[in-house]
Length: 161
Image (cartoon, rainbow, N blue to C red; front, side, top):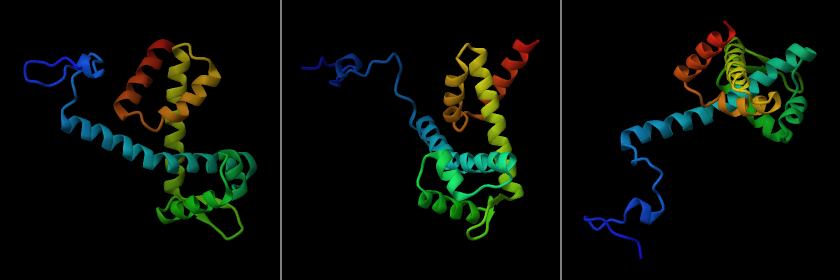
């Protein structure tokens, strides 16, 4: 039976939740979860625009089958996402043709690429192997705040000097 505190609530150690931290204030927790949900919504937009930009730079065109192959998803999944990207003004596509980025799509791809580079360089500066840093940066880049990203960049500047 769990041990009880004076107010008849199970103690943190009795419930197995003693992690050395108090439960966050509800307002703080709401904001944290809201930020993560927003980052998740933005993550696919960023991944797709960055990949489209990379394909265009490398091969001169971006096609749905190339995107599907590189992301490891089915072409219908890519087709659905391309429709979403069109609806938010990030790409233009011709039926059975190549996909191009709008000015906004290019800006998003470049911003995502820059964030990825900073996060990956930061991880490598900490001694993380290149392949691991690249993979980890792919997830972190979408969730890192502007403040943390700026701190990573400052750290990198200090270590380069």
